[in-house]
Image (cartoon, rainbow, N blue to C red; front, side, top):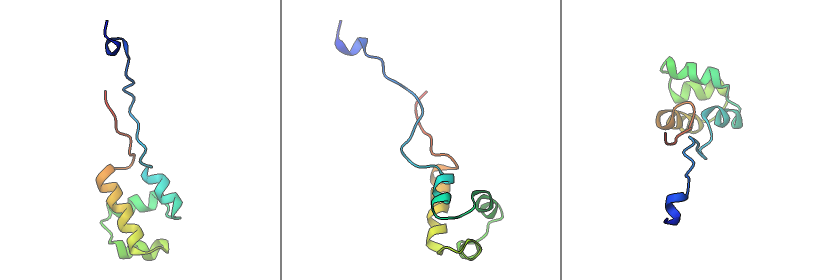
Length: 77
């Protein structure tokens, strides 16, 4: 028997990418209010003023949401 035939590969969904909630916490942005701002289609500048951060921070969080969603868990089934 070939060595590879006896190996079992874990197929657990996981990612090293931090979740959006963790990223918002790190920069002092309330996660629920941020999601609400996205829902209301608020601009980066509007949310930046509300949260007291730069528009670039909000743009980065928005990009994370658009690319990975709320949670960044990806894997195989």
